[in-house]
Amino acid sequence: MPIHNEFEDAKNIRPWKDDRESKAVQKIEQYWERLRGSRLLPSRSEVDPRELEGVLGNAFILERIAPGLARFRIAGSHIVEFTGLELRQMPASVLFGIHSRQVLAEAMEAVFDEPAAVFMQLTSGGGFAQKALQGEMVLLPLRSDTGEVSRVLGGIAMQAAVGGKPRRLEITRQSRKTLTGFAGPGQGGPKPRVISRSPNPVPSERPTSAHLRLVVSNDE
Image (cartoon, rainbow, N blue to C red; front, top):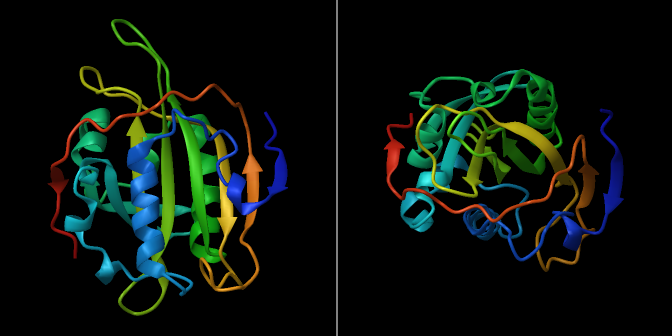
């Protein structure tokens, strides 16, 4: 289904936002906003896992490796258990079904090249002894130690604890906050431009974090 674009005010950055919103994803986003302050972006070296207490299992760090591609450097336990994979050095696309991988690649390019913050609504289909799940993901750009926009602080939260057969995700809706020219919260600059994209919207459920420990922690 074609993706429809719509420009919205910054306060509607998640057009599907309601009382069931993912608190884990929201906390990761708020931490990133505090880090960057009035700057365009924070740096990877500034990210302190201790500041993500309670949602560390939902968090991850990506490194850009090619246009549209990024690999995991750090992945929280919620994500590892969901996929049933050891994710370090694996591409982020392994989390997704084939129909969502091109959407993810385009979103990654926006994160690194504009740069932009990207918010996605996710679903994972049910099957034998498994119910369908819904959740959210956020992709937030970071600078590397050399100043390039080549890292991502992200978060994923599904609506329920996971386990059993490994699952794959599909992207049902996304919005992008273009950061270029935006001075930061309360700085008097122009508001970020938000693009809402809805390939196949579905009702959102409130995700909850499953675990708080960090499974992969030896980032380089």
